[in-house]
Image (cartoon, rainbow, N blue to C red; front, side, top):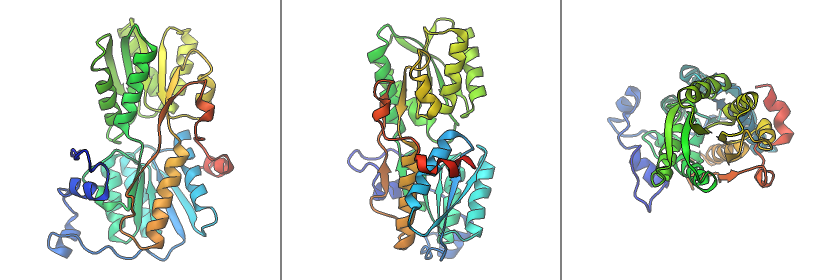
Length: 341
């Protein structure tokens, strides 16, 4: 991702500048001789598409936020999930465009497939927003707006929590999510930066769990066997964190300090045990709600991009003592609808 001037941050102007070098699709280049074409008006549809990365609790909570944002608007939410496959994500977005939905909210599987999908949508006038933006990048000009939970900041929050709560330090096992999604990479960067001045900590294993509990546990099991002195496990998704906590309980490993990211119902239960100490918390529902609001504004006012272009969802470290005070991760009213995804 291109570095942005400190005073420009995630403004629309900054994102456009960061994306200036992206090669446009051949048809778009032919149509405008190398410059961008005028974006058509949105299709006259009362449907908004929601493309989810996969069928797991976090994504369903994202959907509850989207349902909540559309309540009383007269728009219908149409949901597809990609099974964590970039090719399926591309197919889903293309299907939405073919159906002439007015707008699309994307929870990316891969930055590239989500961005190319948004480009295809824009050519058809369909307004798109992403509910988990990794930050400035070359494809941002194809979105009407983005929702961000800054990953570098999140990684630094985790690192600071470890320094404050594990004074002895120790060897760390890091379980990433899906590489290429644009989230794990920025979390890694923030965690590394936070621990740079803490030599008592050492990351001895780092690998993807792919938002799969079984894969995450397999990685942790192998890492603890190879590094028996490891006493800290950090993972980047509650669906993995729940499974890792169950594994630690089964092994009686109260000595391992385990930190996860985001939350679901099982996370709240595990936080009351020694097998999960904290989570880098943010509301999945809020990411879906804010991204859907961006799409609605762009559709209703025929905007290519809304202002502000970036909406930041707050994040913080939460433990059993204060997680109940955090914004809800799901909109309970719509959990029944989301459960069918």
